[in-house]
Length: 324
Picture 1 (cartoon, rainbow, N blue to C red):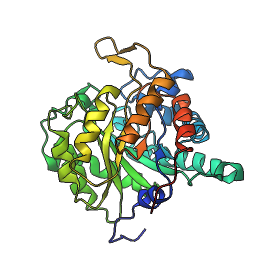
Picture 2 (picture 1 turned 180 degrees about the horizontal axis):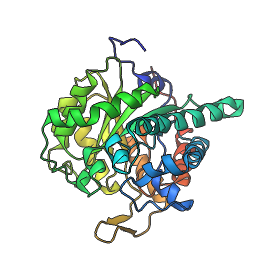
Picture 3 (picture 1 turned 180 degrees about the vertical axis):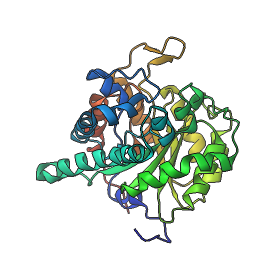
Picture 4 (picture 1 turned 90 degrees about the vertical axis):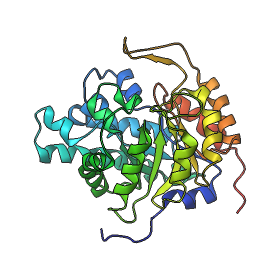
Protein backbone atom coordinates (compact mmCIF):
# COMPACT_ATOMS: atom_id res chain seq x y z
CA UNK A 1 0.00 0.00 0.00
CA UNK A 2 1.41 3.44 -0.86
CA UNK A 3 1.92 5.74 2.12
CA UNK A 4 -1.01 7.97 2.97
CA UNK A 5 -0.40 11.49 4.12
CA UNK A 6 -3.62 11.82 6.11
CA UNK A 7 -4.63 9.49 8.91
CA UNK A 8 -7.47 7.27 7.76
CA UNK A 9 -9.83 7.31 10.73
CA UNK A 10 -12.22 4.35 10.51
CA UNK A 11 -13.96 5.30 13.75
CA UNK A 12 -15.05 8.81 12.81
CA UNK A 13 -17.64 7.89 10.18
CA UNK A 14 -19.11 5.12 12.32
CA UNK A 15 -19.44 7.35 15.36
CA UNK A 16 -21.33 9.87 13.24
CA UNK A 17 -23.83 7.13 12.36
CA UNK A 18 -24.03 5.14 15.59
CA UNK A 19 -24.26 6.36 19.19
CA UNK A 20 -21.74 3.82 20.45
CA UNK A 21 -19.46 1.08 19.13
CA UNK A 22 -19.18 -2.25 20.93
CA UNK A 23 -15.80 -3.91 21.27
CA UNK A 24 -15.40 -7.62 21.84
CA UNK A 25 -14.60 -9.23 25.18
CA UNK A 26 -11.76 -11.35 26.50
CA UNK A 27 -10.04 -13.76 24.14
CA UNK A 28 -7.99 -15.69 26.70
CA UNK A 29 -11.02 -16.24 28.94
CA UNK A 30 -12.89 -17.84 26.05
CA UNK A 31 -9.90 -19.94 25.01
CA UNK A 32 -9.65 -21.30 28.55
CA UNK A 33 -13.39 -21.92 28.69
CA UNK A 34 -12.97 -23.99 25.53
CA UNK A 35 -10.19 -26.14 26.89
CA UNK A 36 -6.93 -24.30 26.15
CA UNK A 37 -4.13 -24.36 28.71
CA UNK A 38 -2.63 -20.87 28.65
CA UNK A 39 -0.05 -21.38 31.40
CA UNK A 40 2.68 -20.36 29.05
CA UNK A 41 4.85 -17.26 28.43
CA UNK A 42 3.10 -16.87 25.06
CA UNK A 43 -0.34 -16.92 26.78
CA UNK A 44 -3.11 -16.72 24.16
CA UNK A 45 -0.55 -16.20 21.38
CA UNK A 46 0.42 -19.86 21.59
CA UNK A 47 -3.03 -20.76 20.22
CA UNK A 48 -2.11 -18.95 16.99
CA UNK A 49 0.32 -21.81 16.55
CA UNK A 50 -1.67 -24.70 17.98
CA UNK A 51 -5.35 -24.06 17.21
CA UNK A 52 -5.89 -21.00 14.99
CA UNK A 53 -9.39 -22.10 13.98
CA UNK A 54 -10.47 -21.78 17.61
CA UNK A 55 -9.40 -18.13 17.63
CA UNK A 56 -11.30 -17.56 14.39
CA UNK A 57 -14.42 -19.13 15.92
CA UNK A 58 -14.22 -16.94 19.01
CA UNK A 59 -13.95 -13.82 16.86
CA UNK A 60 -17.04 -15.00 14.97
CA UNK A 61 -18.91 -15.67 18.21
CA UNK A 62 -18.17 -12.13 19.40
CA UNK A 63 -19.42 -10.67 16.11
CA UNK A 64 -22.58 -12.73 16.47
CA UNK A 65 -22.95 -11.46 20.04
CA UNK A 66 -22.93 -7.90 18.72
CA UNK A 67 -19.31 -6.72 18.66
CA UNK A 68 -18.55 -3.97 16.15
CA UNK A 69 -14.78 -4.29 16.61
CA UNK A 70 -12.62 -7.39 17.05
CA UNK A 71 -9.21 -7.14 18.71
CA UNK A 72 -6.71 -9.63 17.31
CA UNK A 73 -4.86 -12.39 19.19
CA UNK A 74 -1.53 -10.57 18.94
CA UNK A 75 -1.37 -8.93 22.38
CA UNK A 76 1.43 -11.20 23.56
CA UNK A 77 2.68 -12.15 20.08
CA UNK A 78 6.17 -10.92 19.27
CA UNK A 79 8.89 -12.21 16.97
CA UNK A 80 11.26 -12.36 19.95
CA UNK A 81 8.89 -14.52 22.00
CA UNK A 82 8.16 -16.90 19.12
CA UNK A 83 11.86 -17.26 18.31
CA UNK A 84 12.59 -17.91 21.96
CA UNK A 85 10.16 -20.82 21.58
CA UNK A 86 12.29 -22.15 18.72
CA UNK A 87 10.40 -20.80 15.69
CA UNK A 88 12.19 -19.12 12.82
CA UNK A 89 11.90 -15.44 12.02
CA UNK A 90 9.66 -15.91 8.97
CA UNK A 91 7.36 -18.33 10.78
CA UNK A 92 7.09 -15.85 13.64
CA UNK A 93 6.18 -13.02 11.26
CA UNK A 94 3.59 -15.27 9.60
CA UNK A 95 1.93 -15.89 12.96
CA UNK A 96 1.56 -12.15 13.52
CA UNK A 97 -0.08 -11.78 10.12
CA UNK A 98 -2.26 -14.81 10.88
CA UNK A 99 -3.70 -13.06 13.94
CA UNK A 100 -5.11 -10.30 11.72
CA UNK A 101 -6.24 -12.71 9.01
CA UNK A 102 -8.24 -14.83 11.47
CA UNK A 103 -10.21 -11.82 12.70
CA UNK A 104 -10.71 -10.53 9.15
CA UNK A 105 -11.96 -13.91 7.92
CA UNK A 106 -14.41 -14.13 10.82
CA UNK A 107 -15.63 -10.60 10.08
CA UNK A 108 -16.09 -11.36 6.39
CA UNK A 109 -17.97 -14.59 7.11
CA UNK A 110 -20.25 -12.75 9.52
CA UNK A 111 -20.89 -9.91 7.06
CA UNK A 112 -21.76 -12.23 4.17
CA UNK A 113 -25.05 -13.05 5.89
CA UNK A 114 -27.56 -10.31 4.93
CA UNK A 115 -29.43 -10.70 8.24
CA UNK A 116 -26.30 -9.65 10.12
CA UNK A 117 -26.25 -6.26 8.40
CA UNK A 118 -29.50 -4.91 9.83
CA UNK A 119 -28.77 -1.82 11.88
CA UNK A 120 -25.12 -2.73 12.18
CA UNK A 121 -21.92 -1.22 10.81
CA UNK A 122 -19.53 -3.51 8.96
CA UNK A 123 -17.31 -4.59 11.86
CA UNK A 124 -13.71 -3.43 12.14
CA UNK A 125 -10.55 -5.38 12.93
CA UNK A 126 -8.15 -3.76 15.42
CA UNK A 127 -4.67 -5.33 15.54
CA UNK A 128 -3.60 -5.65 19.15
CA UNK A 129 -0.22 -4.22 20.05
CA UNK A 130 0.39 -5.15 23.67
CA UNK A 131 3.04 -3.50 25.85
CA UNK A 132 6.69 -4.44 26.10
CA UNK A 133 5.93 -5.95 29.51
CA UNK A 134 3.66 -8.57 27.94
CA UNK A 135 6.67 -9.96 26.07
CA UNK A 136 8.58 -10.21 29.34
CA UNK A 137 5.70 -12.31 30.78
CA UNK A 138 6.69 -11.33 34.32
CA UNK A 139 3.81 -9.01 35.23
CA UNK A 140 5.70 -5.84 34.34
CA UNK A 141 2.91 -4.78 31.97
CA UNK A 142 1.11 -3.88 35.20
CA UNK A 143 4.06 -1.87 36.52
CA UNK A 144 5.77 -0.28 33.52
CA UNK A 145 9.16 -0.31 35.23
CA UNK A 146 11.03 -1.31 32.09
CA UNK A 147 14.08 0.92 32.38
CA UNK A 148 14.04 1.44 28.59
CA UNK A 149 14.19 4.70 26.64
CA UNK A 150 11.59 5.85 24.12
CA UNK A 151 13.96 4.93 21.30
CA UNK A 152 14.51 1.44 22.70
CA UNK A 153 10.76 0.91 22.99
CA UNK A 154 10.30 2.10 19.41
CA UNK A 155 12.93 -0.39 18.27
CA UNK A 156 11.15 -3.20 20.11
CA UNK A 157 7.72 -2.45 18.62
CA UNK A 158 8.74 -1.50 15.06
CA UNK A 159 8.88 -4.90 13.35
CA UNK A 160 5.73 -6.18 15.04
CA UNK A 161 3.78 -3.04 14.17
CA UNK A 162 4.92 -3.14 10.54
CA UNK A 163 4.08 -6.83 10.21
CA UNK A 164 0.61 -6.42 11.68
CA UNK A 165 -0.08 -3.53 9.30
CA UNK A 166 0.98 -5.67 6.33
CA UNK A 167 -1.99 -7.93 7.09
CA UNK A 168 -4.43 -5.05 6.57
CA UNK A 169 -6.28 -4.34 9.83
CA UNK A 170 -8.59 -1.33 10.00
CA UNK A 171 -6.63 0.18 12.87
CA UNK A 172 -4.27 -0.65 15.73
CA UNK A 173 -5.20 -1.21 19.37
CA UNK A 174 -2.17 -0.06 21.35
CA UNK A 175 -3.49 -1.44 24.60
CA UNK A 176 -2.82 -2.10 28.27
CA UNK A 177 0.01 0.44 28.24
CA UNK A 178 1.19 0.86 31.84
CA UNK A 179 3.33 3.96 31.34
CA UNK A 180 3.36 7.24 29.47
CA UNK A 181 6.80 6.66 27.93
CA UNK A 182 5.49 3.65 25.99
CA UNK A 183 2.56 5.67 24.63
CA UNK A 184 4.95 8.39 23.49
CA UNK A 185 7.21 5.80 21.86
CA UNK A 186 4.30 4.27 19.95
CA UNK A 187 2.99 7.63 18.76
CA UNK A 188 6.49 8.52 17.51
CA UNK A 189 6.66 5.13 15.80
CA UNK A 190 3.28 5.63 14.13
CA UNK A 191 4.76 8.64 12.34
CA UNK A 192 6.89 6.15 10.37
CA UNK A 193 3.67 4.58 8.99
CA UNK A 194 1.69 7.49 7.48
CA UNK A 195 -2.06 7.09 7.37
CA UNK A 196 -2.20 4.54 10.17
CA UNK A 197 -4.87 4.98 12.85
CA UNK A 198 -4.56 3.68 16.41
CA UNK A 199 -6.25 3.95 19.74
CA UNK A 200 -4.08 4.31 22.83
CA UNK A 201 -5.40 2.54 25.90
CA UNK A 202 -3.70 2.55 29.30
CA UNK A 203 -3.94 0.23 32.27
CA UNK A 204 -4.62 2.12 35.50
CA UNK A 205 -3.86 1.38 39.15
CA UNK A 206 -6.47 3.69 40.68
CA UNK A 207 -8.94 6.43 39.75
CA UNK A 208 -6.35 8.85 38.36
CA UNK A 209 -3.04 7.19 37.48
CA UNK A 210 -1.53 4.76 35.00
CA UNK A 211 -0.08 1.60 36.51
CA UNK A 212 3.33 3.29 36.48
CA UNK A 213 1.97 6.35 38.25
CA UNK A 214 1.53 9.12 35.67
CA UNK A 215 -1.67 11.17 35.78
CA UNK A 216 -3.98 9.84 33.09
CA UNK A 217 -5.25 13.35 32.39
CA UNK A 218 -1.69 14.43 31.51
CA UNK A 219 -1.30 11.47 29.15
CA UNK A 220 -4.62 12.25 27.45
CA UNK A 221 -3.71 15.94 27.08
CA UNK A 222 -0.45 15.04 25.31
CA UNK A 223 -2.30 12.62 22.99
CA UNK A 224 -5.01 15.16 22.12
CA UNK A 225 -3.26 16.74 19.14
CA UNK A 226 -1.57 13.59 17.78
CA UNK A 227 -3.37 12.83 14.47
CA UNK A 228 -2.66 9.06 14.31
CA UNK A 229 -4.46 8.62 17.66
CA UNK A 230 -8.18 8.19 16.96
CA UNK A 231 -9.32 7.33 20.52
CA UNK A 232 -7.88 7.37 24.03
CA UNK A 233 -8.88 5.18 26.92
CA UNK A 234 -8.36 2.52 29.53
CA UNK A 235 -8.50 -1.28 29.54
CA UNK A 236 -7.54 -4.22 31.76
CA UNK A 237 -8.52 -2.13 34.78
CA UNK A 238 -10.98 -2.63 37.64
CA UNK A 239 -14.42 -1.33 36.58
CA UNK A 240 -14.90 0.70 39.77
CA UNK A 241 -12.09 3.04 38.66
CA UNK A 242 -13.57 3.71 35.23
CA UNK A 243 -15.97 6.64 35.97
CA UNK A 244 -13.23 8.82 37.46
CA UNK A 245 -10.74 7.79 34.77
CA UNK A 246 -13.26 8.68 32.06
CA UNK A 247 -13.75 12.08 33.65
CA UNK A 248 -9.97 12.60 33.71
CA UNK A 249 -9.62 11.67 30.03
CA UNK A 250 -12.63 13.74 28.98
CA UNK A 251 -11.24 16.81 30.73
CA UNK A 252 -8.05 16.63 28.66
CA UNK A 253 -8.97 15.48 25.14
CA UNK A 254 -11.70 15.83 22.54
CA UNK A 255 -10.91 12.42 21.08
CA UNK A 256 -13.43 9.58 21.51
CA UNK A 257 -13.00 7.66 24.74
CA UNK A 258 -12.58 3.88 24.66
CA UNK A 259 -12.93 1.66 27.74
CA UNK A 260 -12.82 -2.10 28.09
CA UNK A 261 -12.20 -2.97 31.71
CA UNK A 262 -12.07 -6.32 33.40
CA UNK A 263 -15.27 -8.00 34.52
CA UNK A 264 -15.01 -6.96 38.15
CA UNK A 265 -13.36 -10.08 39.53
CA UNK A 266 -9.99 -9.67 41.27
CA UNK A 267 -6.76 -11.17 39.95
CA UNK A 268 -4.15 -12.41 42.42
CA UNK A 269 -0.79 -12.52 40.59
CA UNK A 270 0.89 -14.57 43.31
CA UNK A 271 -1.66 -17.37 42.89
CA UNK A 272 -2.35 -16.62 39.21
CA UNK A 273 -6.05 -16.86 39.94
CA UNK A 274 -9.17 -14.77 39.57
CA UNK A 275 -11.50 -14.59 42.56
CA UNK A 276 -14.93 -13.13 43.18
CA UNK A 277 -17.96 -12.89 40.94
CA UNK A 278 -19.19 -10.38 38.39
CA UNK A 279 -22.45 -10.72 36.52
CA UNK A 280 -23.35 -9.54 33.03
CA UNK A 281 -26.12 -7.42 34.55
CA UNK A 282 -23.65 -5.58 36.82
CA UNK A 283 -21.29 -5.03 33.90
CA UNK A 284 -24.10 -3.63 31.75
CA UNK A 285 -25.27 -1.26 34.49
CA UNK A 286 -21.72 0.05 34.83
CA UNK A 287 -21.36 0.38 31.05
CA UNK A 288 -24.52 2.48 30.90
CA UNK A 289 -22.93 4.88 33.37
CA UNK A 290 -19.72 5.02 31.31
CA UNK A 291 -21.75 5.87 28.22
CA UNK A 292 -23.56 8.60 30.15
CA UNK A 293 -20.12 9.92 31.10
CA UNK A 294 -19.15 10.32 27.46
CA UNK A 295 -17.61 7.00 26.45
CA UNK A 296 -18.31 6.01 22.84
CA UNK A 297 -16.44 2.69 22.54
CA UNK A 298 -17.08 0.03 25.19
CA UNK A 299 -16.06 -3.60 25.45
CA UNK A 300 -14.60 -6.03 27.94
CA UNK A 301 -11.15 -7.22 28.94
CA UNK A 302 -10.21 -10.07 31.31
CA UNK A 303 -13.01 -12.46 32.33
CA UNK A 304 -15.64 -10.92 30.07
CA UNK A 305 -17.43 -13.22 27.62
CA UNK A 306 -19.73 -13.16 24.59
CA UNK A 307 -22.60 -13.02 27.09
CA UNK A 308 -21.31 -9.70 28.44
CA UNK A 309 -20.98 -8.35 24.91
CA UNK A 310 -24.44 -9.60 23.89
CA UNK A 311 -26.02 -7.77 26.84
CA UNK A 312 -24.09 -4.59 26.01
CA UNK A 313 -24.90 -4.77 22.28
CA UNK A 314 -28.63 -5.37 22.85
CA UNK A 315 -28.80 -2.22 24.98
CA UNK A 316 -26.66 -0.21 22.55
CA UNK A 317 -28.99 -0.96 19.62
CA UNK A 318 -31.80 0.82 21.49
CA UNK A 319 -29.88 4.08 21.89
CA UNK A 320 -30.99 7.08 19.83
CA UNK A 321 -28.90 7.84 16.78
CA UNK A 322 -26.41 10.70 17.18
CA UNK A 323 -27.41 14.17 16.02
CA UNK A 324 -25.14 15.38 13.24
